[in-house]
Image (tube, rainbow, N blue to C red; front, side, top):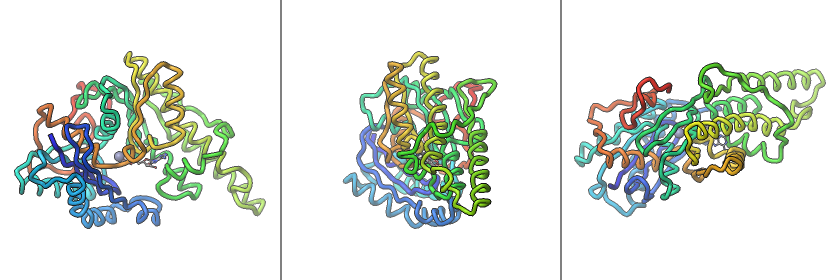
Amino acid sequence: MIVLGIESSCDETAAAVVKDGREILSSVIASQADLHSHFGGVVPEIASREHIKAIVPVISEALTEAGLTLAEIDAIAVTYGPGLVGALLVGVAAAKALSFSTGKPLYAVHHIAGHVTANLLTYPELEPPFVCLVASGGHSHILLVEDPTHYKVLGRTRDDAAGEAFDKIARAIGLGYPGGPKVDKEARGGNPEAIVFPKSKLSGNELDFSFSGLKTAALNFVQKLSQTAKNKGVDTWDLFSRPDFCASYQHAIVEVLVEHTVEAARRCGVDKIAVAGGVAANSALRAEFARAASANALRFFVPPPVLCTDNALMIASLGGFMAMAGFPEADLTLDAKASLRLEDFSGIRTPAGNPV
Ligand code: KG4
Ligand code: ZN
């Protein structure tokens, strides 16, 4: 089952070819991050226009790199949500046109569910069940992966996504966009215990998490610091080490993600944990997960950073698993869905009433 995957939900135009859900044949990613960095975040209209320019060359390059023609592809998979609607529409329209013109089946893939499969691509021997943290710019979930197309939501953020928590603070301290990698870099050499940020206490599902209290505490810290600096006529970061601030903030995010994922594995009785999504590229998160996994006799799976951030391999992979498991094809009325929830995605089965 050879699948061409197409991804355009945010600021990466990507296409990839995957065999049987696990074997990488090609992957092409055209990132617009530099264009958006001037604006401090993704500008939706610019993103859509860039996707329009890049989509056909990126798809052609993915086919060339795989050494295949369109006729040799068995199916097409595309991200149809969640994401920026104008950006998603470009990929969806391209995938529908390819499906219509070639007669190949089309599979509509949920972006966040797709992230999980980066682990199946990285580790051909990895078999479910495993617990997977998916932490991206807009979503943070802890999932029990029961098979490649069957996930159960165990926990999720109640407010900001982990990536959003990185991006907002990075902007506030002048590091710019995209914030996560910049905070990660700035934090190297910083003391993660320089500031002890408060931990949120949540009622209800103990595996859920919240980052808004942490973000507010960090913003208050920066505001007070800059006011004092102003009064003294000095620069804000002359008064406190920015690497220490970043390392402490990063530590607070990572600690809660690791603790909840390990606890989720304990509750489910599984001995494998994995991470996915852009935040899984974070160096402190990767190190802390590795440490916690070994302390708790768990096996830890982590894709290379390029497979954590947005790519089309994960879409081609999940599309392939859907095709092999006999999931229904999408038809040509397929539309982009900006706020698509995991529970509304027909490509995976989640038990009814599962909190998503
Ligand atoms: O999965 P992704 O590439 O796109 C979405 O689906 O949102 O995730 C993007 C998010 C952004 O918030 C970005 O700041 C964060 O992942 N990110 C990181 C790192 N690399 C990307 N966060 C922390 N450390 C990193 N090294
Ligand atoms: Zn993503």
